[in-house]
Amino acid sequence: MEVVELIDKLRISQDLSIQEYEFIISIAKEKHIEYASFKADEVRKSIYGNRVFIRGLIEISNICKNNCLYCGIRRDNKNAIRYRLSPEEILQCCRKGHELGFRTFVLQGGEDPFFTDEILCKTIEGIKKEFPDCAVTLSLGERTSESYGKLKQAGADRYLLRHETATEEHYRKLHPSEMSFTNRMECLRNLKEMGYQIGAGFMVGSPFQTERNLAADLHFIQSLKPQMCGLGPFIPHKDTEFNNHPAGTLNQTLLCLSLVRLANPKILLPATTALATICSEGIALGMKAGANVVMPNLTPVSVRNNYSLYDRKSSNGNQAAEKLEFLKQQMNSIGYEVVIDRGDSLQG
Image (cartoon, rainbow, N blue to C red; front, top):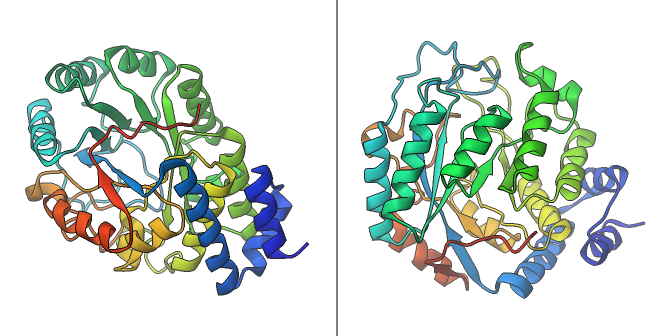
């Protein structure tokens, strides 16, 4: 079967094997990537029209107890300038975001022990009380099932937890021995069973990643059926052991975006900051490849650069919340419309 035939098969059935995904990834030329983008854009427009949903990203802390080998805010990076937002500072970010038109706030951070269930629950309750029309998304790593339950009860609507890789052997090459692939997958299952709208995701072109690994990631998303998927190119950080590893490519990232859209037609799919970092037109190209979410940065400018997962992060340019009007104009120029909406997933 040819690549185009497999793309058409995915469009119709939303189901490919790992071997079929691997074949597409290994063979795809630029014409195939353009074809996949065209089909993914078609599918997305049939469900969401030309609407682009915005999320206000608030990076609440770059303190992390983990030591993931690829990450710039890993525990052992002594060069990182650490910060932590107080609950009141988080609420101030939400106030600013609400004025700008954001109706979903994404609280993202390292696994910072300061943010206990009690502190997070009070923070979430405060946001929900002041902004009952808004959704709260958390992206705060691995926690216990009991913790996830408390956060949901406090009002959290969504939880993003990138699986990073669906292959255990690959996972072990990217993480220290004390971290567990089994636990990461267990957390995702727990979140889904609790009724969260969940998000998983992976890096394209990460160290040691094979075409089979990437195919397994695509198949995992197809099987898990999360409401959201955050995928972007791997970008190295100067203070990690992968500092000289090449970044993931634009074309392979766009292909993966399109394949995820075709396999999960109703998914909420961001064009990520990492995509904007490797290509100035990354957000626009991501939209044309099937994405329908952008996450401008609401983190205070004074600490924004310190949330450095990778080098050259694009968060103060067009990815800044202050540039929302520019983003709207950019989307309008390519036929899309940024909407003020919670942007709930249609995927059950």
